[in-house]
Length: 316
Length: 316
Image (tube, rainbow over all chains, first blue to last red):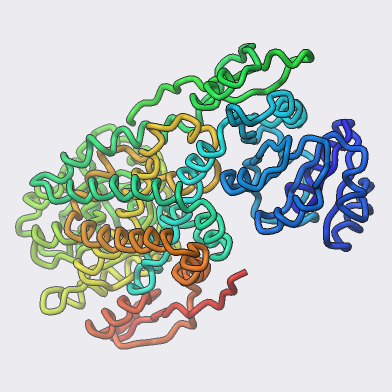
């Protein structure tokens, strides 16, 4: 396939490398001339403008941050191919979407960023949400992208933008806020920093992320984050009430046990691959039960689906 | 010195090894005959009963879990030496304390437990709280223990039992509860487990601890944990309110920034060692500002103190 990639940071640059290595004809563009030079020097095809990059391509991947997306979309007016993006919040992007748009989110972060950190194997095994909106997404376009990204080893997860945003609020955005809240408590108790060890270190690790980045993630997904934060607050209030019980140890065990079981059963173990129909409701049903696809058939009528199996755990 | 150690699990067994290696005369006892055999087979001195272990010793270290402590203390009636323990909550132990008792808590957990996991170097560099209660603790007894444990490389932190319990609630017990609350949220959203990655993995790691152990830690320190949980709830409520602001990103940044700075400045960097008077109020002042001691002078009149220095960070 002929593919354009706009934005050559960690995700875009890695995608340029990976899709080129997979045998596609791929051309990249970045607004920063130094980044374009780095990509050229790495033997990759680079264009001098967005229109030049798009010329003759079937798919455009917009790998720019959310604030830069409206300007890039303006340059896509009249583009006839499939368009996707890689930003971490999908609701706001859906509101901006051009024709033939399918929102995407590869869960492939790294501590580092920029073209220098790019890696052709970054997407091997990573979960990659591709948004599927009933009555809105063209299934053939969705399958085109699913074919491309499963070809790089990604586990493609079909979800609506709303479902995606709720999940990332739960497993990423709210954990960043709770890490920040725990870390922020150091301010009024100097011996706390001296005695803090493993549970503090891990529970607050992501609080070392740039404040602007945490704020952008959470504030950009404010509705879902607020709802998920309310659930977390309710769980913590329940734990707090149990500390008031006559026997707090006995009162805590029954609520802690399911949480311990869930954590021990994570990450989910993949089940046996099965062939299912490439149908919007079948695909969304798969994504909603925690499944993903690993391939699209040649005909585009079937996909290879994996459903996680329940992992046996013991409360050791 | 002549030292008895009652309980030869991870902490007691490691202490038997470490103090023996440091040249002291140390005898261990464990209620489990198989554990006693393991310790004997490792070339360590082992007694067949608590009284036999205590005979002729200057110091008794009770390295048994909190529920086993009252029964062991009953066997110490009339013991003339210094007594310490290693449990993780100090208020309840203080209520049980025999004469010449100094509560202790080495922050030296490991994933594993039991004599098989023991390690003579376990305490090298670890923070070890030794409780110092004005008007109650005999300073020479406190200094005897501080000499022993700094001799193993431990950083001895002077705090009252109440201060200790507040700190561990903050840096260990509440982080266990927030990890459990985050992990427990997986129950009603199957794709969450599929998309969860680094921030979820680290933020919930300690939720894989045995439910009974988390409940015992938190329930055994219920007053301090409840108070600290209220602080965390207030911080999370504030973050939640900011998500309702007209510009949630701008509203979040000012509260996230100090938390990010605190996490980046952790762990504190040790300052230059200084000699200070071995005086109860000087020692408690040191502990309350996040300091620790690394040695006691021969005369017992001075200690070598380390105060953490402020680490410069940048909000990169």
